Length: 452
Image (cartoon, rainbow, N blue to C red; front, side, top):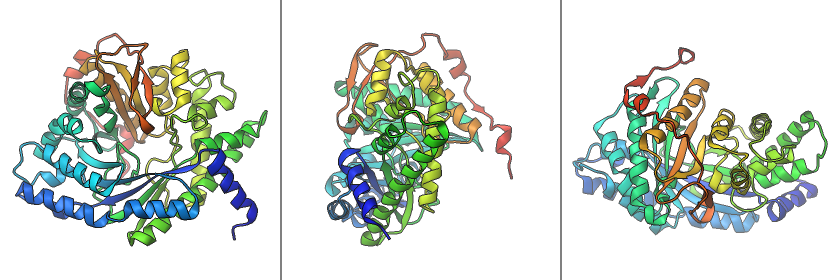
């Protein structure tokens, strides 16, 4: 039974500590929408999304009002479009992205993910067409998000795809240069992508998922921050226990919302993703949590150890709170979406190299990082390859969402707006990786992948 003290704690988390449910994401299978006639396929896609998600936004708003828990985003993820569109006669898939965008607009959802391809071991014709369509698709749509999985621990790293994605990111940047290259903020390159991720821009509805499912992503950096502020001078054992207990509470609230949404929409409940997802709002920062542990600035020596404690304690607390924890589940470190990270970059304590080291511990990877617009495609590809190697060798999900901002250089700022925030342009290595990237082929799977 919930006691009055727990109710008061929950109210305080919402009112004073920036607690929210970051997203309710409905995953929808489009496998039965494949059709040789592309117009027919797109009509089926639009109709199916509209049918299943008709009440998604309303249900989210109703739950938010009734329980007093802010639900920030309502989103949709679909089966990777490269698989669905491959049966059609289209040479490019821009029209499919426009169909997704039209459905998202009509339903009032914030984003729709799944303009995606899985190419960790090689391309099909559908993969090639979809990837080639990404720049124009993201330039012409508002709510569509794209992702490409270029590596897994089982398959190794598809270096041809890595090289290709460097060029795609540059092209996307150029086509949206009038908006600080915002198209790249809706494009993620993955290693070990998961099938039930509710967070954008990397969400897609995996092939092993049911016909339709509800996944919820929670967010509680402010709540964790408030909890450890009360433990001034405490040892690390005490900090870990405090974070675990707090993560338990916020995960229980996330499951409450997920189950309620599932019942009202008559759709199965999938998972709760207990990631700490920051925002540009002051008091809602993962970087500030690390600093509260005793670091002068995020990025200082000790940052990775602090992040390891945080990530582990969050997962332990969350797993005790729900039997269906999934998605990414950990601490996100998106520079543009975390005011503490932005401040650390400006101070010089946080660099891309340090962020890359932090991705060995955290969820996802190099996220929402703005770099000079004249950065070469080969350098971007090399950054992707490094991040993929971290994911493959450590059997974890890693990703790159990097934004070469056309016309801007180090010392300037890119403005994206909303939850995407703004980002200082970060320097990258001036040393070339071109010959390395041009080798092509595949980096084989590591020995630790042979577990059968």
